[in-house]
Amino acid sequence: QAVLSLHQHSDYLLHPATAKWYDRRDSVFIEFCVADSKDVKVNFDKTKCGFSCLGGTDNVKHENEIDLFDAIDENESKHKRTDRSVLCYLRKAQPGKAWPRLTKEKAKLSWLSVDFNNWKDWEDDSDEEMGNFDQFSDMMNNMGGEDDLPDLDGADDDESADSDDEKMPDLE
Image (cartoon, rainbow, N blue to C red; front, side):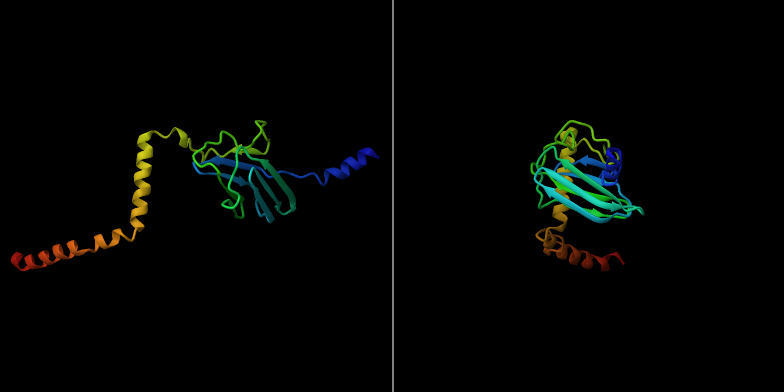
C-alpha cells in the first residue's frame, strides 16, 4: 500500500529543467535548456526566480525555483523563449556587484551549471580594457547623438567643398 502511493506520487514529482547561467556587470542570464517548451511561466521576485513549462513531445512538466544570490529588479527582468530553450535576463538590483554563484545557498544543484561559453570575468578587466570599453560606449552614444550630426554636415564642410570646387578648373 505504502509503496503504491509512493509510486503514484512519483508521477507528480517535478523535473527541474537543466539550466546554465552567467554573470554580467549589470545582469545575470539563466538559460533553461528545454526544447519545444509550452506553457512557459517565468516569475521574477526580488530574490527569487521561478520557472515552469511543459517540455518535449512527452510534455514533461519542468519546474525550477531559485533562491537568488542577491536581489534583482523584477520589473526590469525578462525572458525570451526559443525552440531550444528559455533565456532569462535578470537585472541586478546592484549593478557592478559580481555574483560568485547564482543561488543564495552554496549547495550545488544537479541541474544548474555555469555557461562557460558566455562567462566573462568582467571584474578582472584591467583598467586599460575598461578605458577602451568606455571609449567604445562613448563612441556608440555619440554616433547616434543628434548634436553631433550638424557638425558633420555643418558650415565647415560646405566651405571646404566649395573651395575644392573652385580648384577643379585649375587642375584641367
